Length: 225
Image (cartoon, rainbow, N blue to C red; front, side, top):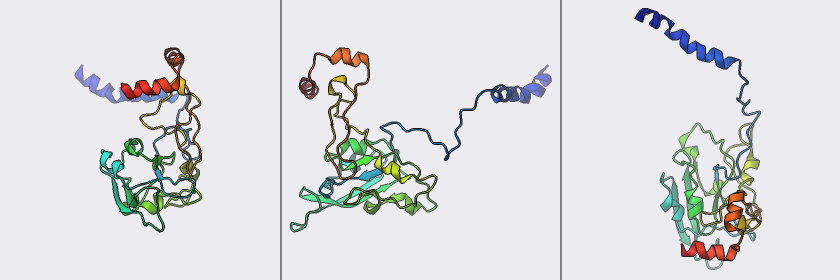
């Protein structure tokens, strides 16, 4: 009977296809239809400025040091005394990200002490030349008015408005949705997006666990623990 099993083998595979053919389709007509991205979606990076136009990056290289894919290259330089680029003693003179290596883990965002680098909702970044996948400071840094830059022209695939969306980002030391911090703004103002929205509680369980603990006490507990 083994020859009968061999003969029916391909048809058994088609049976799975026929069973699925009558079910509702779940695919989307991309790029005409795009799914709504989560608030903390890991998309393309941007380098932010303060509201007065000064760069937030201080060239500390912490983002490059923490990157598990080794895709970030930063070189700091001393600020010119007569025309400082950033509020600190140094600024990011060279800043490059190899998007072909990047795994979009956002560890660079969490490591940054000045909230200089954040991630947006743009992820369509196809290129035909590998050199074009290395984003320099010219492409990453927003303009003085907060307008983001991008090397590719807008199209059906590239919605540059998604470069302005990154409001859901919080650092690893933030409350991460704990109910006591609901409405508390954890990000400082920037030229790109202004003051970020407050944090939102995540669940009833979190509310019950922390309803008697004020935010100040919770912060002290986190620092001690």
